[in-house]
Image (cartoon, rainbow, N blue to C red; front, top):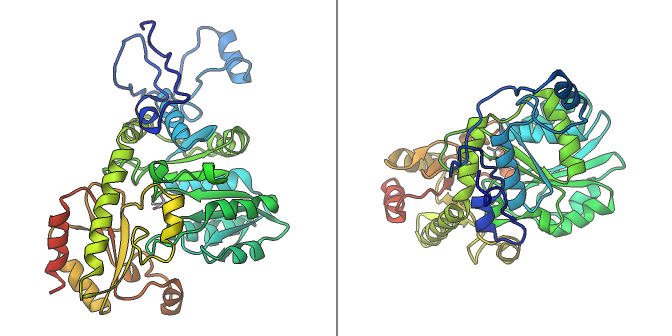
Length: 398
Ligand SMILES: *Cc1c(COP(=O)(O)O)cnc(C)c1O
């Protein structure tokens, strides 16, 4: 190690710089890029040191279910980008949500959640968390008074995603944080679609930020992972307490992929956003398209909120064809370049028919209520040339 190493004070440095530099601890090998530590356990200099580590008298690594240097670098870097005191990494986005709920709530507690959330999160809340005696009331994302009305003396947590997937609806995070705190509740935001490059919920008053790192943080569709960011009390104690005993921790290799992903996150999110904006504007003027859902469009009912709450509009958009399922499937099947998959946050553009995939388990009435029509198509815009994406979409439209 040289004198220069491990001395970078990242306080006051900008987002882009922290994304590249935060959290690295160089070893005696003087490596330039961050190393991977594929080890399950750590050795102690003596029996006394082992005892001191186990009792918590002395800080240090014991076992990778608790701490791992590569995972710690990822956690420090993401915490810094989310403007959080603390971050804990998890094995997947779903285990980040599970760790948040089971780490912070107990039997008899209640939570209020947006209805427009990731499908598996709905299943987790209604089928698994409910079995443990923690109940959920679902409300419409943008309706602030519905949130407040749903809060009971037992409510501990408000949970949401903004913008929503696939209809890109928003909620005013600052206004909802105020409601949450007035009633003594925590506000948790699943920031998967925007990432901290476009939206930092903690700076708007949210208490907890949750991620599926599988999506934009990886950015190339390789690894499963998740994270929870917040204060030392809530996340460092509550959520981490669940994690170290229940065990869904992030692997060192995946942490390394994600921490390298953070280095290019801002550039990628800007490119995804620019491409999605161009595609949304192009789709909006096609006669075959009835309506386009994208926060960057003037026609989006919450465009003004999106402009103040987010620094970019993201890579996900949806559009409704002047037809139903038949036209939707024909368009999807005619594509040659786009990937027919429900994943998002990849360099490769993906195309989905929500009514028969992500929202296929809902009844037709529930789908109508959620605004998911049979002619709705979702596109998560990747980093291919935008003209090639347009040409591929046109194949099945005319
Ligand atoms: C994918 C996703 C999740 C779940 O993440 P996994 O890494 O697949 O477990 C949670 N929330 C949102 C918004 C997602 O898109």
